[in-house]
Length: 389
Image (cartoon, rainbow, N blue to C red):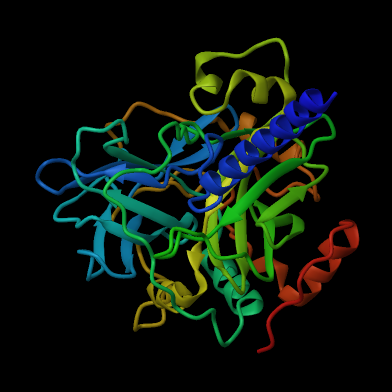
C-alpha cells in the first residue's frame, strides 16, 4: 500500500511538473501553431526583407497593391531606425538593409491596414520563413485613428526592455498562410493577444484590451480581453473580417477569413497552419502579438494625414476597380467578382458591411462611444470603457 501511494504521488508530481513546464515554455513568447499572423521572418544573406501583403476575401486572398510599409524598431538590438517600403501592383515588397530585431509593423493605405509585432531574424539557415506574408484588414485609417484615440489611454503603458532573438524560440510555429480561422460549433471564434517578451523572457500581462471585428464599413462585434490575453467573439457568420485590438497594453490590426467548422474535409490548405485535430474540432485560434502601448504614438504619427490635410495617396495615375482597388492593366483579373462580393455582403452579420469591398471605410460609425455601447449591449462580455479624452 505504501509503495502504491508513493508511486501515485510521484506520478501526480511528475504530471504537474510537465504541465507547468509546458505552460512556462509557451507563455513567454505567445508561441502557438495556430496564430493567424506570421510574425517571425528571416532576411536574406544581404539583409533584405522580402514579402507580400494580401487581404483575405471570400474563398481566397486579394493582393494589396501600392500600400506603404513601415517597420518601427522596438527596444534595443541592431534595429535603430524606422525602415520603409511599398508593395508593387502584385502586392509584393522588398526592403533592403533591415537589421535583425523586433519591430512594430504598419502596413497601410486609405482602406487597407495591418499592424502587429514582427520579429526579424538574421539569415541563419533555419526553417523560419524568408518571406513575410502580411494579412491586412480591409478597413479605413480614419476609423482606426478613432479607435486608437478612444481606447488607448493618454498615458500609455510604460516602456520595457524587449528581448531580441537570433532564432525563433518556437520550433513548430505554423501561422496561417491564407488567413483562415475556424469557428466552433456555435459560430464563435477564440483568440489570444500577447505582448513581445521582455528581457526576462516573459510576456507582460495584457491590461484593459478590447477586440473589435470589422467588415467593410461596419463594426460587427466586440469582446473584452482577459488578463491572459484570451477573448471569444460569438455569433459570427462565415466571411471576411478584420480584427482590431486596442487598449492599455497596445494595438493590433489583422485580416482573416472565418470558415465554418467541418469534420469531413481537411485539405493541404488548412493543415498547413492548424493541426488536424484542431481543425476537426473547430478550435483554430486567432492569436496575435500586439504592438506595445508605448509604441502606439509612433503608429499614430505614421497614420497622420499629409501636411496639406489630405489623406496619403498610394499612387498617381492608377486606375481603380469598382471596389477601389488599384488595377494593373496588364495583369490577369484576380479576386472575387462583384456577384461574389454581394453574396458576402448579404451573408454578413451586423447588417452587412460589404465583405472585403466598398472602400467607404468605417467613418459612418459617427461617435465611437455610441457604437461601442451598442455593440456591448449585443455581447455578454464586459467591454473595457474607452479611454478618457
